[in-house]
Image 1 (spheres, rainbow, N blue to C red):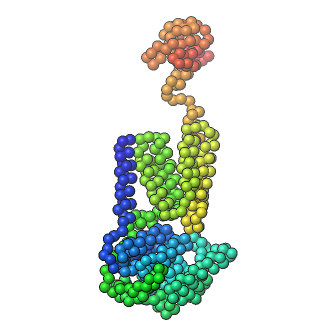
Image 2: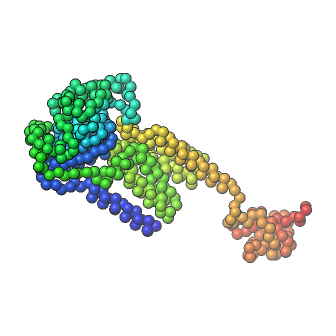
Image 3: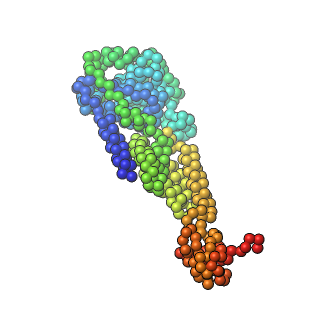
Length: 437
């Protein structure tokens, strides 16, 4: 147990050190251009990374921030957070679609940026709102979402002097434009082959920040600092998923309760602590409900008690209900893309419920089976009377003399008797009938 505690402490300390070390911003000289690289869905992890990167650029008096973007789209809430961070940035933000596309959410981010550029062969547009699963919205909800999105993109277009009509079409009709067409339509200001080419082209561009301060970009000879995602941010990208958070939380709780009920197993305890740490790490970037967390952990308390308390399945059923409710509540207030899958919740609850029932039924079967070892195995054995039982005396069993009392009259010394009952250290016996009677 001492080794297990030391291992858990070392794991927790190492993870904490990684979190601290990997969350710091790199030191760069003032006047540098900070480059942030994003690739994938727009989600809370991307939002936190861009917020950190823009914050570092502001703290270190950067000339500008270049966001290299390639995204198929993402969550509305994260898109709004990124756009708002760009709008209030104290340094100019240059959006560069460096490969692939800036679709859906990426279009809004491009329109909100102070300067927008694309690499040859890239595409922008297709910004019609859809659900987190990729399905079309219902008619009423769709009209509201489209109306809101149109208002936003037209506002960003007016703020940056871009093509508002095309932006509206991208929202209403889902149209897209390749880089050359986007330049001609005043969707972006530059087409650049790479970051170095972009720095040369945007040099001398005048930008107005939200504070009203106007600044001229001096990027041609500026040093470049690549502020890439940290190890922790890359891990978060993998696990920042409500379904994974739910699984980690559930499996971690299960493992910990196994360790509590079977101290010394070590592996369940180590796995449980790591899984719970990763679960809360994942939930740190996903809006969640503490009531859901409490219900999920309470479910495993009930599952554990079911194995030790005779409740005829009531505790196990309560655990299933608590797990389902906890899974539903965990991310219930989020948009569809940030909610735990109901299929996953029901599947896991059914599997665990079936497992508890299986264990419970087998434990009942074992309890009803005759004892195979221990004092209860004495009943039914044939033993020899060491002395006359009148009706009390001694019998010889397993190399020892036992006090015994005959139930059916006097027993002579040397006769065989059958043990019928045991009370403390006293046996109840009856005469063994001769074979054939």
